[in-house]
Image (cartoon, rainbow, N blue to C red; front, side, top):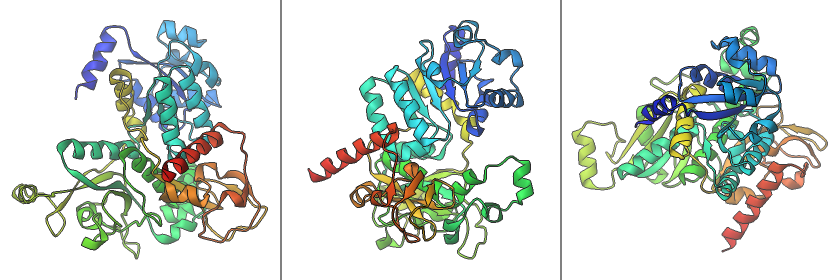
Length: 450
């Protein structure tokens, strides 16, 4: 509870946490806005495919032009200013940088960036949760081997949910379930970038005015992002994925204890110890009051009479049996909260969530009947969405993870609603992400066999 104090001490000592950031999109820009207020850090370098856009974003959020006018990384490291460029390799190899923040949103690139950073003894805060969903435990293993920290990004929902799970377990409670909220109706699964704004509640004109990316927003709407983030939570918190995908039961915050308990006790879970997502809409599309759409929750158990009596005495909201209770964070502030990860990794050498197992996976599921010869366009596109599955099932069945289902060609027809399999595609096997994923699959199969 004293991270801020310790960060202030780093500033007073003239020894700020030195950071390099790859990607200056929405998440990165939100962090850049807050970084101006964090005296205990120094952003040595920002790299982006479009440096001029990165500079424009920095100016937008209040950076003085002189603050990002360093002529090189060496100049930035010595002067205290920031260098903006497009060479990520120079960033991860620079000796004065301690932490790399990966926030490109490109899962294949993110894996390559992370592995390179580990090789040069840099800690990684991985904002690109899409990469963590299908390679998280492999990246964590590589970081451990290199003697560095690999961390989820605080501000995104997986790290916040893991924080709640850790809180519950540290208090001595048994965690029954954890997850996030979402706006969900079953037909959203078929949404494409052409239909997303109608479902989202914006006009195409409003979306264009806001420079909103329809594919990115569609990844949230069609269930891909909830599956990705649920996989990250499961793999970090030691929870299980539902056998047939997320249930998305409708409910508000106070409904969570009734919903997120085992089906045998009136809830929606196959068993205790699972992840799922709560929808803020009823089956007919009506908004549910006091929803958890933008937040996260943990459901835990009063497994003794004394604990249940305490719940009753302190008038907390429980399920109708008085046995299950939830705690929650109703809002997540995305890049505005990333300073918590920077401080935790830089000062405590502690991740804000990290995949410890390969328990959950996100399979690419056909949105419609797909024909041989079609090219899959990945997360948020026209062809596939993400479906959460137990990792053991996904690997045994040969499902293609959503993160590797971009720009690959079908060699077979795939029916709507069916997961795409490796035998259905012609994939690019010459990538760091593919190789690391295959390592994880081999390891999982070996562990299952034992």
